[in-house]
Length: 347
Ligand SMILES: [Zn+2]
Ligand SMILES: [Zn+2]
Image (cartoon, rainbow, N blue to C red; front, side, top):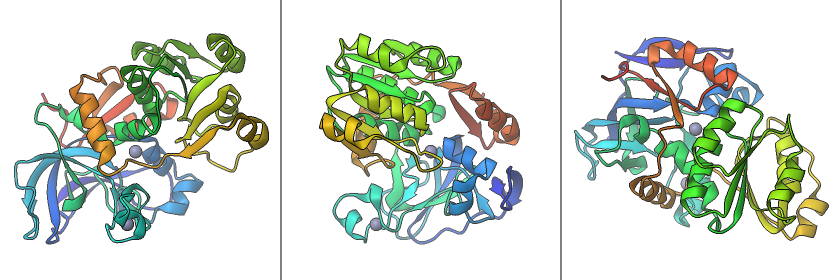
């Protein structure tokens, strides 16, 4: 048996359970989970909001961000063996459909996300198909190795177009926005302006190199960005909040010919001024889903090798047993990234 964090029934909360060890298919890799991290998606499932109710079937082991050590491989596995240190692409792609075969695995038609549509990583062990496993350098600590998956979202969003020498605005400074601030700075943005309603998160953005932090509850974000960019607006807007007001402000701040990238998921339909803010600006608008497999993973690895420092973003660590304290903290937004250790916090 193994310890696992489970959504048992269609209602709020998770339960820590003893579950049978998962079966190992011939193309499967069994991994002892060393560290996991909590994502906004997990919070949706924890709270059991409308999105979670539409996506998740219970019972389900939750969690999709992790790293670990391979402890057993199926007989058809050729590239991994016991002892390998790995992370994994959490969106299990089929490698058969048209997008997959065209090199667009991140928009696989048959995608199954671990911890959402099949059993996930908040457990002592997980079994993953070999094709989704990513080899991880031994010198990356587990609390950083587990962040390759969420960091990859921000790498994908930030590097989907040019950021160097451009003014970059990041709306929403949860972990994905904070990662984007750090990546844009590392990649030579002319300036990075970060927006959030939580002072705690704005302080983290400053620590990660944001040139200006703006709280829309305390200032006129659109006016401030216009001033900071000599009236041109932000060349690139990375929308990491899903909040309607933030999206509207971001679109207002976008320069003529600018790039707007949506990553944050709005909880409902929203209203935007397409004519004023997109068409008549000649803007480019792109949706960002997950990570390009494996391009984004390579970019992420290069950024970590080059010294991208994520340590300020990891603000809390808990043994998995204390998951309720962890989710309560995230609920209040007074944290960066929260790490959960299935086997307890290592020494
Ligand atoms: Zn996630
Ligand atoms: Zn596919």
